[in-house]
Image (cartoon, rainbow, N blue to C red):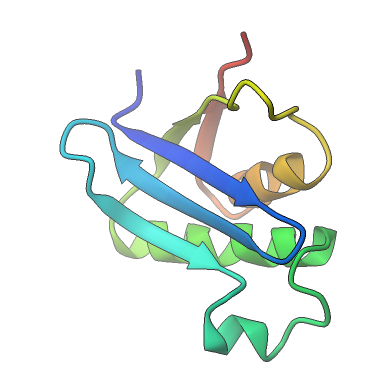
Length: 103
């Protein structure tokens, strides 16, 4: 198991993602389309380009915190496709090794 977990939340209005340390439950990197600096440059806060931007920003913040690997397990109601896949793929493309555990 990786020491850091990826949590992705997508609603009809916004997208947010965070990397959390498994033992201490401390969030080491957070990105969301509700923050003012990100909200201003996006056309929509919940489409695929927004998900890709969140993945890129989260990867930058994770590298600043010296986090290069993480694991992701989708919630029971989430399917690993579409917007969630875009966030995870964007993290991988920007240098964070994400291991996806599908049940």
